[in-house]
Length: 304
Ligand code: RIB
Image (cartoon, rainbow, N blue to C red):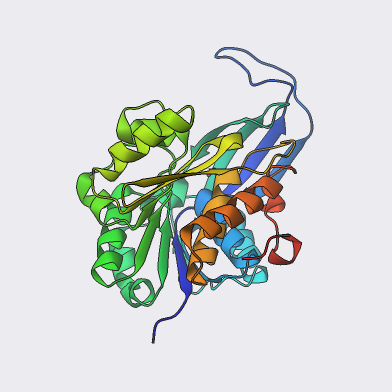
């Protein structure tokens, strides 16, 4: 029987965040505001988003044998996420991210990956049935690329829809791209994949066409406050964002991806799913933090 289960395979971090008027330039020290320690990591943020927005979620990640790791797993359980397939590394620490946020809500992030980077293809192989049993496999690039490649090929061969958020940006093989159902890059990631600077709707469309030509069925480029651009079957649609005052854009993309996966798992059209995802991410940018800012389904005034 086909389920509507979403498996998120990816990273988990603890975010160390400071907000300041502006981001420092190289070599500069600036004074900022209050320090915050928040749960984060692109994989974890997307798993939390998908669960809060109504998805049936299994999160596959790897933590270290430390307090950050055990606290993170406790949190996911409270979020109704299935944590039965979370691995633990005896030697590497749990992931940590250092984040600066400026007064416009833009951020700069440096990640110390730790245990995230030991999540291996063999780990995925050991829980193969979980991947094959999903409706959607949602991944990012904060774990080893070979693990993402292995999982994408396993899922695609077994009829599981693979969604990749290629963040942080890196070059990807055409083989991986051809195993994807949907790719969701932002402007920077789209430029890395296409060689085209996707700074507005027109250049975004060119970048999307270049990425699709490498074998992905559906390309969705998130263009920040502009909205999202959808390219499917050679047909391009511009889906504008909801206007809000941004406080912190951290995890806006993660909320978008988690929300999109949920809407698709419920059988909604791509365009409606993107509208829903735009709505959810517009709420996420109005407060500080990654998982702290992700909305619940009951708070979304949008009928799917
Ligand atoms: O996408 C936002 C996330 O990127 C943060 O939570 C941080 O942990 C980094 O992984």
